[in-house]
Length: 136
Image (tube, rainbow, N blue to C red; front, side, top):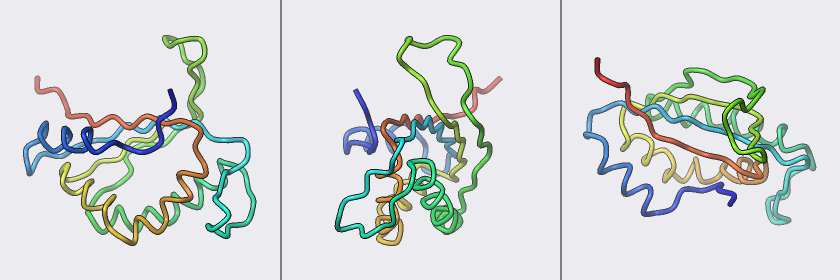
């Protein structure tokens, strides 16, 4: 099953699982479309899924900055050593947010909503996993 956008119950769970001032790191697993699937009303020039995600990333950096979040690590996914045979990812991204609420604030901001169509057009599948460091 493909997943591009979070569901309301998952977002509500995110807020319940993290203390209000607890940082959260989001693990993003991304699989790009060969050709971006923009809606006609988006009025965007045709491009690859990877190029559409680059458009999104460039614009999303300002949104991350507004909530004091920052990318921690970005890399190309290479070999799924332990995974189902049909599960491959193109890119992996870690983003640190000061809190779960900061993440929710960003994704609900109208300026963010105005750019998310690039992400939607770019991806055929994704995973977004909220993480916390294990206390030793």
